[in-house]
Length: 197
Image (tube, rainbow, N blue to C red; front, top):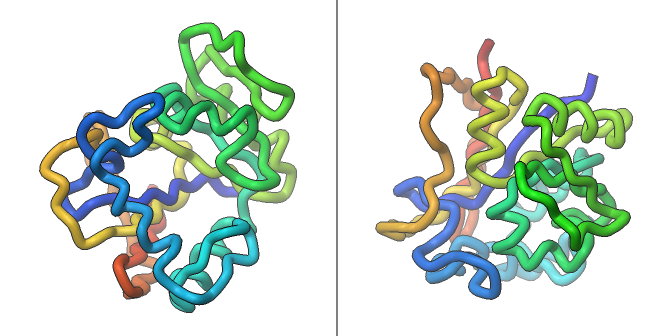
């Protein structure tokens, strides 16, 4: 069966955006969270325009190649200008989890209003043998609470943002993680965890 995982750039103090993130403002004052996408000379094989360090490229492309569908939350969707009508991944369709209507949705995007379990199930069906990627703190937290997440990857950037949107929200209990791999790279440390059940 395919896996469900999240991979997010995050500050050392746990933020996935800076202050004033929002539509038209992206990550707000937290844009340095994505600097490592462009701080090397190794082109990504999955994402055109990304030039990473060799260590980051190996891990990033390995994770990206696994993705067959994405589930994202409404804040991530809006902050990313609705992904231009597409998806945050070059080939994977987007499943938008939201309780509100989304009249601007396109054929590469599917609105799911009935909860995280249904969103992940629909994404799994679309992904086939590939994995499902999760985007956004609310989506990841809901999926963790429902016991749906297999792996968590933190692309930890050495900065304290001091504010913004926190990655993890309140969970009903502890979630134990087992470190699979730690990859230090220029401007980021990649921490790959398995969720223990």
